[in-house]
Amino acid sequence: MSDVQETNEPTTETAKAETREAKKAEKRKRGSKKLRIRLIPIWLRLIIVIVLVGGSLLLGLMLGYGILGGGTPADALKPETWYHILDLMRGN
Image (cartoon, rainbow, N blue to C red):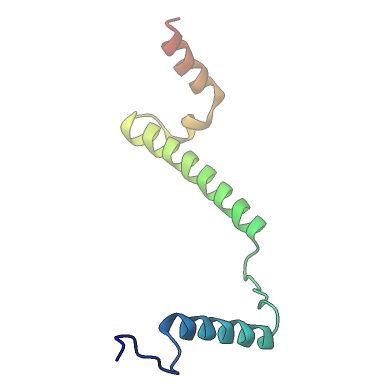
């Protein structure tokens, strides 16, 4: 008697390959990829993110200058304030 027994059952590798092939065939039957319709398009999402980041920057400037700096929040948006800050940084 030999130690190797021959059976007619498929090996696990063959069964896995058959399962993969069956899944591929099933996908082909269903058709092509399902189209995804987005509620908000990507280009609009980018614009929204840019606007929100800019708004939070302005809000942070106004709150920081008004609360921490002791000035009026609207002064943070004036060019004269920024010229003054740059003059202080340059040592003028």
